[in-house]
Image (cartoon, rainbow, N blue to C red; front, side, top):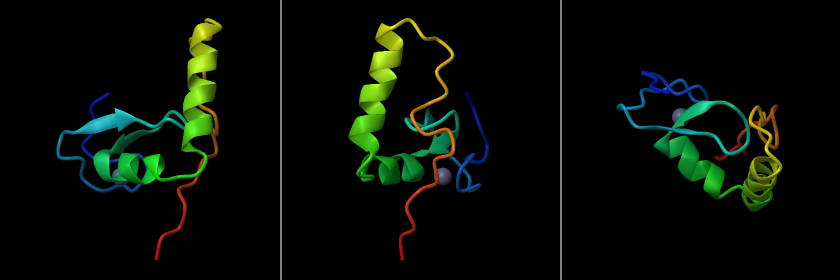
Length: 72
Ligand SMILES: [Zn+2]
């Protein structure tokens, strides 16, 4: 899951990426940081763990149409 550019913000990843907890995007650590501050993040983690424990291997994420919160 290497990306030169973040799926979400399209910025350079500096070779450090992670899977979004909300959907299937591969995102940079800045976007990950924003995700963890999202009020839905805990629920998304829980949904992901539940899918895993149910044996769902093609789980698309808690919010496939997730859009990050706007921050001014
Ligand atoms: Zn990003």
